[in-house]
Length: 283
Length: 327
Image (cartoon, rainbow over all chains, first blue to last red; front, side):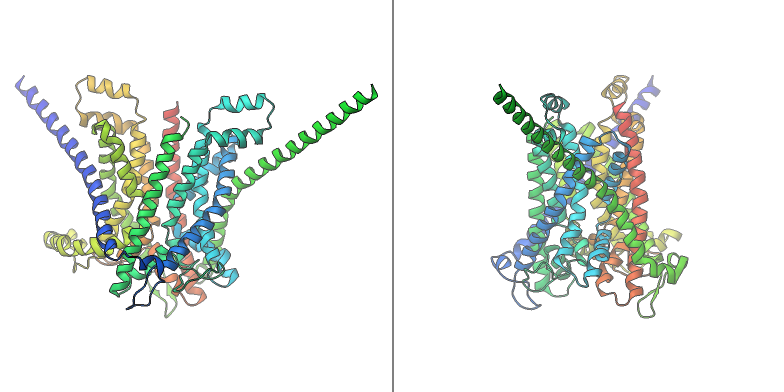
């Protein structure tokens, strides 16, 4: 009897060690997040002022802001999403509606999931080969194309998932009224899955707006204001990269401020997306 | 009589016209969605083909020795991929060693231990960690994490492991701050939320009856987790780990900041090194000459191939557990 009690105590002890370790792991995860955000706020707020939004990126040693980088990021993200979203939505529609059970669809689904986590720098190399080299120069168009390649798999995935959640009775009822299939999809399925699909697009925007690697050798960088999408264009992540790696303190300060801006933008986008996704997604 | 007849005919013709219009848009829409779906396939093919064409010159010049030589000399135009491949594999392996136990711990916490009211906020916080762009991890790693390691952690590691024969070499050398270990730890932080998310999802597929029965027999939490939850979800966990590994192998910006970009293979994991993605990010725009560019693209091809295999295995395993959950 006494022996059993000792065994029981040992089991209890083992269990509480495991439980404690699990608590510790979670605490560690939250601590990392807190430290990163705190460092960002501390270093980023120090350099945050109106000039950041009104002046161009400076040469080392003089005052300046990040206006051209912010504008460049907005332009390239906008075009990347505008190009990538329709393709993604259409492909997702095919996977969920027309080819739900076909063999080709499962191959496409599989490949799409791989593209979803494929290294983004490879996307940069790909666009360099197919756009930058033939055109002979770096350009914002190439940058936007690289971002579009990243947008497509994200949107395909969420569109398909959201359309699969739409109850089949809705489709059957509309078909019974004599609606052709494309109208059933566009007028009924899309309407029912709207919130979730919007979430997918927002998540894609959040993902690509922080991407650096695919822009390094497609859009390159630009010290000055440029509204020519056929020329190199600055972007916030690339400027952060260049300035943070530089030995100049004022550049590094700007890099931190840029880092704060981009994190704030990306995190608030993904929070909004999550809120939309949970509040109005069909269950 | 004839009037009514012709009216009916006109109505029928109009009807046919509308229906035919609908048929055209119907086919057009179907065709559009189908070609977009095939475009995804074409995209993968195009990436492979463009990388092969771009890296062809390097492959032709160096042949198989490209994979086995350590030399990386832009001046003499001698290029070998061994050091970046080594760096990529080692940083990812260490990152996995650190991240996997922690991720599983967090996932167990979220599914078994956490009070229900905290479950969502903590889950969201961990997912936010996944949302932070990699360049932020890079700048944070360079200015905050690396100095902290250099000042407080690495000297201790060096002193502690010095007397041991093999471990002493592994942790030898001056504390640079940046290097293989620092990159690996940053990578661990980055893949942590991905592995956690997958593990949490697969843990939730365990039928409650199984766990309840085990608890009912008087099992402790640890015993339920290690004898019921983990065996039931093993394939899914491995899938999640592979998914994280795929991310870690291809991660670029965070590593580029803290790896040190040194083209050599050191015994010590505190020494600077390089990875495939960091080499491409650092050198591509500065690469002069066809053979240099081509070598970098060939590196990209190697990276894409490795991650493709790892991610494909991950997906296959996750598909297996999805089938199990559905059945």
